[in-house]
Structure formats: C-alpha cells, structure tokens
Amino acid sequence: MLTLNKINKYYNPGTVNEMCLFTQFDFEVKDGEFVSIVGSNGSGKTSLLNLVCGNIDADAGSIVANGEDITRKKDFLRYRTIGRVYQDPAKGTCPSMNILENMSLADNKGKPYGLGRGVNKSRISYYKELLGQLNLGLEDKLYTQVGSLSGGQRQALALLMATMTPIDFLILDEHTAALDPKTAEIIMQLTEKIVREKQVTTIMVTHNLRYAVEYGDRLVMMHEGKVILDKSGEEKKQIKTDEIMGIFNQISVECGN
Image (tube, rainbow, N blue to C red; front, side):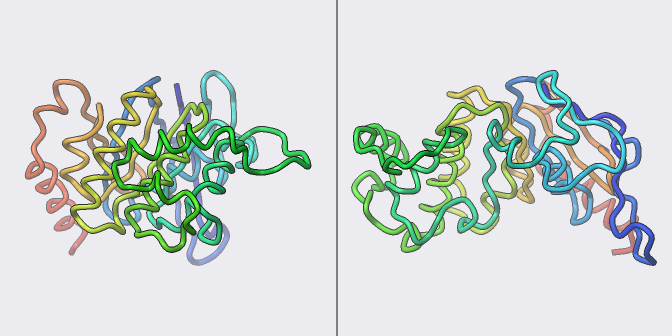
C-alpha cells in the first residue's frame, strides 16, 4: 500500500512566484490497484508521481510505502522497487546500446555490480521469450541499437524493462502521449497485460480520457492540487468518457478559459 499523509508542497518559496500546490494533501493506493489519474495542466498529477519517486521533496507530511516511511529516502533507493515509464520513449532506454545490453542492465537492477561481464549470454533465450510476447519482432533484433527503433518499439521495450525485476510500484507518466494512436493502443493493451499478470500496484497519469475510463480499477481526477473525483469498482465502470469531458469543460469555464 502507498499512502501520502498531509502533504504540503510549495514551488519557488520565498519569491514573488511562490505557489502552493498541495496543502494537507492525502492520497492512498491499495495493493494491486491500477489507478488512472487525469487532470488539467498544473493540477498536480506529475508532481504526485515525483513525490512518490523522490524526484521532489515534500515540504511537510509523510509518504509511506508498504509500511516504510520513505519521505526522506533518496530517489535512487526508491527506484529499486519502483518501475517508471516516461512520456518520452528516449528516457526509459539507452539509445547508444543494443536491445540485449539494455535488457541486461534492467535485469541487473538493484543487484551489486562487479568486474564481470555486463551481458549474461545464458539469459538471451529468456530475453527473446519476453520480447516475443510484445509481437513487435524485437526478439530478432537483439543486437540492434535501441536508438534506431521506432518510438512505439522503444516504449514497449521501456515498459518491459521497467517490470523485468520484482517491483512494488509501476509509475506510468503519460507513457502513450508521444505515440501515434495505433501504437498507443498497442502499448495500452501491453500495459494492461503486464499489470494484471504481475499484479503490480500501478499509477498511470494520462491526458487520454478514454484510456482513463477503459483501463484500471480506479479513476481519479485532480485540479489545483486536490482530488475532485475518485471512482472505483462498479462506480468507475459506469463512468463515460463524455462525463469526464463535461467535468473538464466545467473546470475550464470556471477558470476563465
């Protein structure tokens, strides 16, 4: 379980541009839950992910993951049990290395590094098996530089790499936003498959309202650092994309847009 308790977060404190995003903000994600988060720009979606991952610090409050207070824990230590896929396909992989080398790095996540070879050839068959499940032909391109792959192929590889080792949380930061519609659908189907098979607790931020409605166990809408809609189970199943769009439009009018 992941819990954020009484979080305060200021940006540019002590300046004329000071802005308080979160005030006494509470948020909880249950074990195995797949949460889709939507909201306008500046609503706090990405800041929430960055707080969880330790990329930014809370000014007050606590963050507890599986019973451990990780509020002051360094980000690189948190990432031992967190997998994250970014909006930019280039961020989740190393473009100058081939697929085999990238997967070897991911396979060794959290393990001590010595002076041995970085690539374990005995794992090649396993890597090919994983890649074959993507149905993108990557199992035959192990020695192809990742930088030469398409955006969709790189994002699929990044998603696979993020979940190769045991993790407690999967963080999806608008991971289909940079892809064309057809490729985005493939990545979302792959996401659903991986999340369900591994039963990993997942938080997905997306601007695609249909994905938020169709995927996940719970739908959360944020606005100005607050949760203004939170539906799960049967309630979420009853939500329609047009309903979510209507709330967005209402917020936009109230904000003077």
